[in-house]
Length: 227
Image (cartoon, rainbow, N blue to C red; front, side):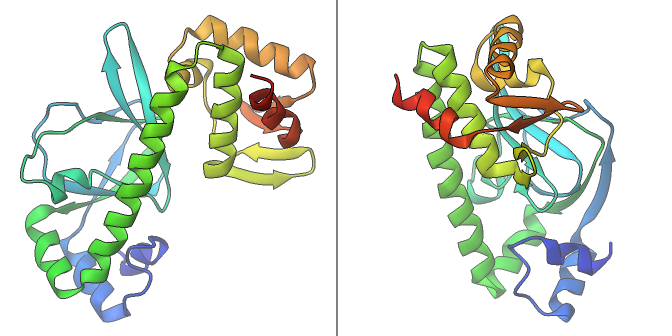
């Protein structure tokens, strides 16, 4: 694997070329097709995954429907809990949204790595704490009964994580189906379709090539203030 690919990951960006070359020798590169499962909740696992390209969803099977917890793309990593805990059971499942290329780093290689460069572990712990905070916010969102408030929170979260400024507003640079959005909100696909149509009619959002553009961030934030 090309060591310079690791330079795109904040965990490794401060390391010199020689050290990156050593890490790259420990990595295995894997490609997954669109919609392919990477691992399932309850599986044993001891790998860290680095997203080189593509989009991956982390989700839990909540009886009648999936609940999407996170979406990761190029430069992100996931599976870190399997490295940080003695228990190797996955707490959620992972599946690609688009064809994805991942770099896999085994725990047996990772532990000596962080012993010699503890700043890598500090970076992972910082990210893990941010994700715990995001998970708590998501739990709060899912308990909100009003679906308009829920979709407003989801849109703001997506613009924060994946937003790119555009001429018409803030582009959420992900191609997400109505089912993906429903799984993020913990609601039915038909409800999401109806809500998106309402928001388009109100000119709060626009959809272009399956990507959502938030036309007015202030008006979306006002949706939260009114509830």
